[in-house]
Length: 270
Image (tube, rainbow, N blue to C red; front, side, top):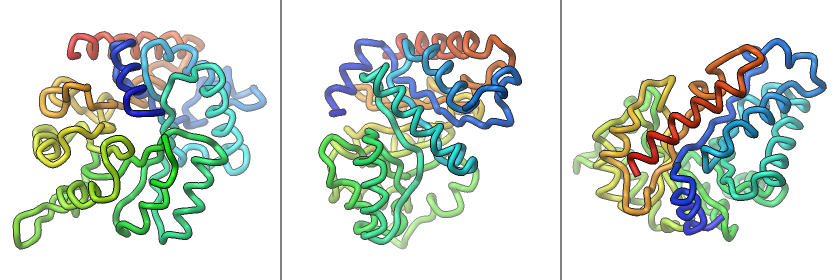
């Protein structure tokens, strides 16, 4: 998916919502556990319920890989289901890959060739040659970890060098030599508040993938105040706050309402 196609979808649906498919079988409604593939059954119901209100889905690979072959099969079926039934939706594999060049090339082949996913989260710690293999695919996106939403992000990401440049700023500034806003996004946590302004000083046009709204306590209004651009420039993710808002047979209906509520807030902010 191109940048313009993503922007067009955001404008058409008046939404920049990304639904995180962090599907934990131990949290799934009991009535689904008898299904042949309870993870996929849950995902399918969530997708059908929330697709009118979002522009992206973000399966987190940890929630699938922990189930071995069955988990990976559920992930593949989920991706295939979205692509076949909702082809205008952007699919992000939240896998946080990144290794020496030849290993990254194999990760890229897995997600961009075999699975044909739109975007992949990538860790920048090992530098340029660990990221550039993911950038060889036209129409595919790297979403680079920059300033994350977790408490431990301050351990390293806010440390500064002798010139006062913080690590997250160095990541954003340096990585722009590798790709432009048509192929690279950045992960910036919703809990980082006014630091979005510092990100925007360096990357005024890039899309930001923003986790941390909802269960982690991030403010949608604050994210938009400091991070929104004329093209929106945001994909705001909500996972648990939508998919596990209810654990009864009404789970999909409640998820749809939560997604609709967020979409309505986003429409006003747009």
